[in-house]
Image 1 (cartoon, rainbow, N blue to C red):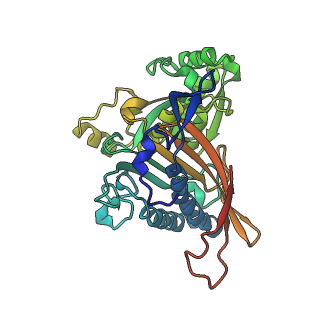
Image 2: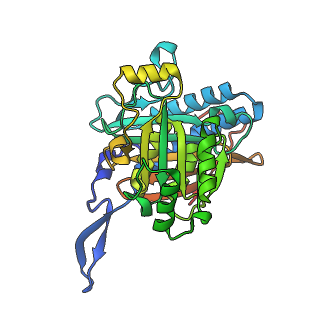
Image 3: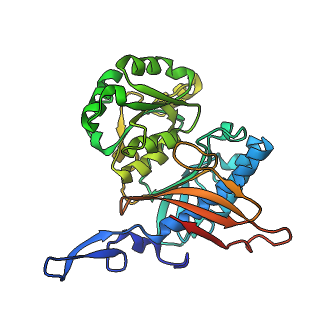
Amino acid sequence: MPWSMDPYGLFHSDASNAAPAVGEAGKTGASRRPRAPLFTYGLRTITEAAARAASAGIEQGDKEQSDRAATAAMRAELDCLPINGMVVLGEGNREQGQSLYVGEQIGDPSAPVQFDIAVDPVEGTSYVASGMTNALAVIALAPRGAMLQPGPCFYMEKFVGPPQVKGRIDPQAPVADKLATVARETGKAVSDLTVFVLEKPRHRDLVQEIYAAGAKVLLYPAGDIAGALMAAIPDSGVDCLMGTGGTPEGIMTACAIRALGGEFMGRMNPQLNSERLAVKAAGISTADWLPCETLVTSDKVFFCATGITTGLLLQGVERQGGSSVRTQTLMICGQSAERQILTTYHRSRPLGVPPGADAASHSRA
C-alpha cells in the first residue's frame, strides 16, 4: 500500500485492520484484534536512512559529520509522511539553522492527521564515531499533544522494568527494595537480576548499592534507549534500568514502553547549575516521579529504532560486500501492542546512478 494511504484508518480496529474472531460454531465473532498497521513499516525507512547515513561517520571517525548526515537523511524521509506533524523533541532550534528543530513542521500542514514527533537521528552521538556499541537512530510518534514537554530539563532519572512489575515499584524506595520487588514479581533471586546503568560518574553510588543488594550491573557508556527497551522486554537479559539519562530519550522510550506494557517512571533530575536554575524558574518539579501514562498520554503511538552500531538490542549497519547494506530495525505499534525486528538488505547504489534509483531492497522479519 503506498504512502498516500489514510494513516488514521490505522487507529481503528475495523474489518480492514483487524482479524475476525471465529466462534466455537465456526461463525465469525464480533471481537476484533488490532493489527500493526503498514504505517509502522513505512516509518522504518526514516530510521534506516538515518542509520545508514550515520554509519559513514564510523568509518571516518567524524561524529559531527555522522550527526549532520543522519539528520539530513531523516529529515528528507520525514517529508514523505502523509501527516500533519510537529517536532516536539528534536535536534536544536531554528535560530541556529538546525534541521529537525523543536517546533518544525513535518509533512502536510493541511492533513487531518496530527502527530507529535520525537527524533534522535544518532542516539549516542559521542560514541558512534569510535564505533562503540548501542548507537541507534530513533523516532517516536504520538497524537498531537500527547507527549510531555520537558522544557529546559535535559536530564531525567528513570526506572524501567518488565510488565510483571508494572504498578509494583515504589520509586522513592531504596535500591535494595526495588530490586527485591523486581525479583519477587519476575520469580528470580536478586542475585540473578541484571541492572542496566549508564557508566557515568554520577552513578557511582547507585552501582555500589546494586552490588550491595546482590544484583549484577551491566555498565555501558551510552545507549539508555536500548537499555530501557531491553529492561521492558521479558527474558531479554536485562531485568531493569536505573539511573539518570537524557529527558528526550526518556520520553521517546516511554512511547515504546507504553506500547509494550512495561514499567517506566521518570523524575526530572537536572545535572548542571544552569539547568537547575532554568528548571526551577519554569516551575518544574524535581521531586515528583511521573508514570509512563503522564509522559505519553495516548497508547496510539509508533516507535522505530534502527541500529547504527551493533549493541545489546540490534545489529548495526553492515556492508555486505559491494552489493548491499544490512540494517536491523525494531518496530513497535501501540494500537496492536506488537513489536517486530526487521532485517533489511538495501541494494547499494552503483557509481553514476542517481539517488532514488536504489530503492530496491528486500527484507526478512
